Each structure stands twice: as C-alpha cells, then as structure tokens.
Image (cartoon, rainbow, N blue to C red; front, side):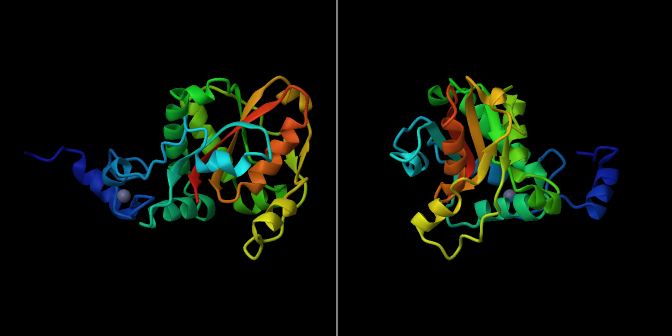
Length: 232
Ligand SMILES: [Zn+2]
C-alpha cells in the first residue's frame, strides 16, 4: 500500500516532537492519545465502582460518611501506573490525566453507586504548591471526568489552609491527624444540597481526601463520594 501523501510530514513532526506513551514510553502512533493501544487495552482496572466493600471504601468506613468510593487503576507491579502518576504530577503530562479522567467519568456514569452525584471537586493543592507546579493534577482528572459527565465544578469552594509535612515517615494514624483541618470552606452555598464527587490522583491511606470529606460533610445538606485515578 502506498503511504499516505502526508505521512512523511507526520513522521517528520514525530521526529522533532516525539510523543511517547505515558505508561510504557514507546513512541505513539498518530491516532493514539497519551497511551499506546497495547497499554490502553491492558490497563489494570480495579472494577471497584459498585463494590461497597472495596479497599478505597473501606479506608473511610467507620471514620467519615462517604457515600461511594472508588479508583480507576490499581498498582500491578509493572510500574506503568507509577509512571503515569509520576508524569501527571511532576512532568506536566496533563494529557494522560485528562484521558484517564475521561475513562473514569465514562465508567462512573454507568455505575449505579454514583448516580446521586451532581457536582465535582478536585482536592485543592496549597496555593503555593499549585503556583510552583503550574497546575493541580487532580483538577486535570476532574476536567476529564466532566468531559464524559457534565457535573457542576465547585472548584474554589474549599481552600487548603495548611501545608502538610512530608508524610513518608509517618504511620497510618499519624497521617490521618497530620492532615486534619487542612481545608476551609470558603463558599458553603456552592456545595449546599450537593452530592460532591471528590477527585484525587492517588489514594494511599485516604487521609488527605478523608479530611476534605470530613470538612464538607460537616456542612448541613452536603454529601460526598470519592474517585481517584489509582489506589495504592
Ligand atoms: Zn504503552
């Protein structure tokens, strides 16, 4: 088959601006977005969404009234999910955050457990951190979700007020207390009588997003659910 007349031009663009798969680093074909087809078809999906006893939901059970909680991906030992999250968070790879947010949104619109949700809020970064990074990676995921599911974005309704210390040396209980009262509601009217989907990039202990959930559910008439790109 003869090459498409514009193929050499496309090859030339790829030569100077090589697009790479955010999971395996292979070169992307023109029709592939963020992830190569191989990685896209082989993503370690959790399929947690309609399981009320999934590990993300259990992180909040008995602590905070979260209606439903889930994550799109699990860590499967291949390093691909770690690479995706690292590129999204530290390398400015917002494309993969949007693509996977879109996939998460498509799945959640079909999930019975999330049908009551009517608003979305990305976990806010501390303003100084967002300035230095240039973007909030969770907001990128939330935008992807909204591309599939037109929820009201209530960004700005909550502010992050303390900069938490590095949590790597803390145990589970210390992490929970370290982030308590990390958030302040600025516009309660924006979340009143709303069921807000809280969005994060990765959930490990659930302490950060749990603190946000606790702050919001202390308001009369506000309920929350939780969705993350990955569960560690
Ligand atoms: Zn790949």
